[in-house]
Length: 250
Image (cartoon, rainbow, N blue to C red; front, side, top):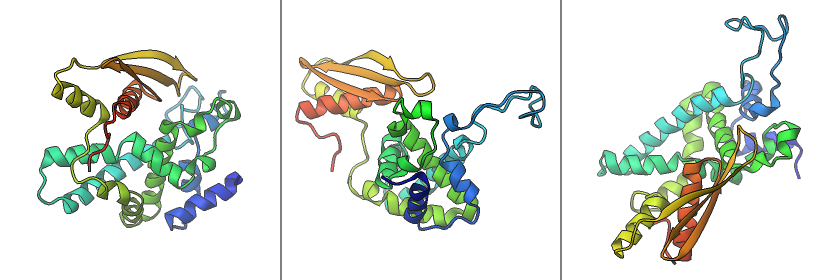
């Protein structure tokens, strides 16, 4: 297992970019739990914050995540516009929504072993949030934001087109979400719509894990994720697989 410093260098190597401002890279890899909220009239007092309390998330990757989300959205829209010249807004929008989604971001983050490089508070580490899709996806977006701020759009474009190449090429038709595929499958057989039920919500308040069950045709699909929407999607995927259906169409 790599040390965190080794993991950070590994991520930088995967990006094929040496940061002119290494502080941007380290900020992109700092979870908000690792930044203490200082209090006191003198300590932590900042312009615009007369209370002296450090704003929630300051020093973490949340601001870079905000930038990276927009950078990824723009670069993906540009790429899809080039890649599918015959498609109109609806089809392009469906592809775009999938390619910038949390599951895709999290899987790409896993592929470059990003989780080992993220700085997380010890008490959150023991709760297992390092491997949450939401944490990985946010860090991946923050990484793109840091890359853009360090060197501009060209290096960010290079990373997006390398890391997302498999996803943009693997399906000939616009992606459909598992919930949509499940609904279409059932309606096509004249069956009732699936029923989703939230069965559990565990974990810390800022990083909960939801468990959802979906029922149809006498079978049950189960999904767990950091939001109810994603847990429902995971449950639909599970149920489709049990029914022998593909969740991605070629």
